[in-house]
View 1 (tube, rainbow, N blue to C red):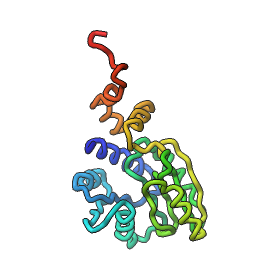
View 2: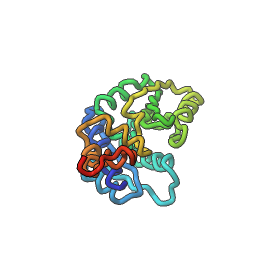
View 3: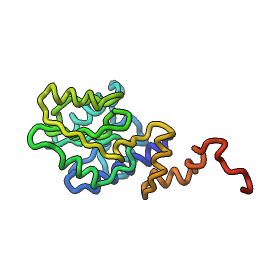
View 4: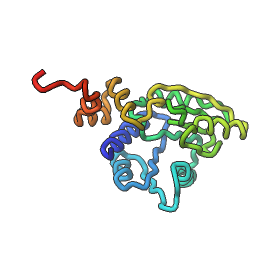
Length: 200
C-alpha cells in the first residue's frame, strides 16, 4: 500500500508539472517518505504539524505556507487519481469562472478529487465523505460562481480493490500501472474460481 501511494503521488505530480500555467506545486503530508518523494520530484514538501487533524486542516496549513508567494489560483488535486492527465488539469483551470470562482471535480463516491479556487481562499476546504455537495454549499453561501467538471480519471479515485480493477482496465504508461503489473495485482484480484489452474 505504501508503494502504491508513492507511485500514485508520482503520477499526479508529473501530470501537474507538465502544465505550463502551474508555477508552484506543494505536497502536504505528515509522512516522511511522501515528503522525501515530493522533493525528489521537484515539488515543495510541506510538513503537516502533528497538532492538525484531517485533510482540511492540512490543506489550510499548506495554503498558509504558500500564500505569501502571491497565489492567484489554488488547485487542489488529491494524490489517489493516478490516471489524470495534463490536458485534463488544464481543462479544470480553464473552466474557472472570471473573478471569484470555483471548479469542483467530483469523485464517483460523491467526494471531491480536484478543486480549483480563485482566489485561493474563496471557500473553506470540505474534503471528506460527500464533499462534492459540501463544497457546492460553501460556494453558494459565499456567492462564488461554481462550475462542476466531471472527468473520468478524477472520478476514479483509488479507495477500494474494485477501483484498482477499474484502473487496470484502462492501460496507461504510469508509475502506478507499472507497479500494479510488477505486483501482478490483476491476477491477485481475480475471483478464486476464475484463476487459472497450473498447466492450463
